[in-house]
Image (cartoon, rainbow, N blue to C red; front, side, top):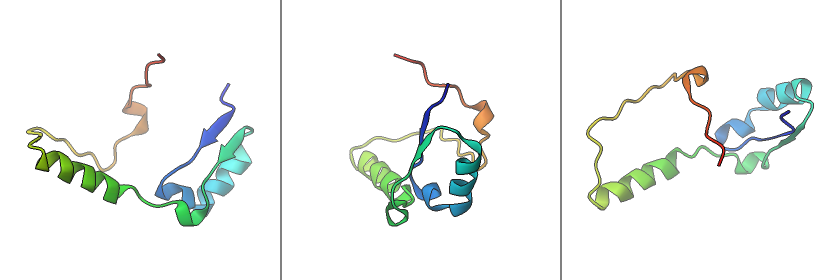
Length: 78
């Protein structure tokens, strides 16, 4: 049974999400302060720029703006 959820990134500042999780989830939910809930887009852009500067490139990138969570595979336990 899921006992704890950690919410991070820009979505953590969403007050409706916080309210709904509090109402629907019986476990513990952990959030950073709202001023620390920032979008990680800048970090991803920097990581991509650094990889490009190192000579890495990806010839086949498929961006899916509305990627359904149901289609994602669960991570394997190690």
